[in-house]
Image (cartoon, rainbow, N blue to C red; front, top):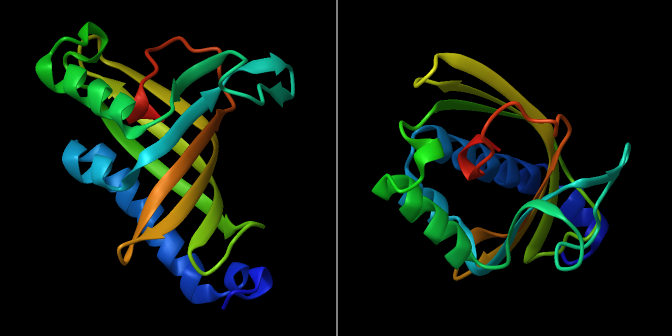
Length: 174
């Protein structure tokens, strides 16, 4: 299964990728932060680009504006620590979230040890502090790698389609 076409069209690989995305959503919604962080490689990239034109997101997180960018898992771990410790005023109390992942497909660039997964997301979240329900939606691009027999997230890019936000933006509501 080293040919791109074989991996990208293999129903078993699509199922595997889908299950990882569903698991990630479950961990976030259940606030299982350690389980969620364990899905990422140490050198992962977590990126939410900004928009530079009506239909053009920024292309380089190191030289253009991003809504969120972490170049390694340590950034995500720090963010989780802030939420857990109560030092994130915007996240206290934690909102309730519900992630819906759909239209999952494998993209070009797949190989036996690397999957490129495209999907859509809708995230409903309820801010208990002021009893407001918000909705965010966008497109995900995950790059999964096989490490020590387990699939891990090496890159996650979230193109947020409703980026004029009346709310707080953080890892748990994307």
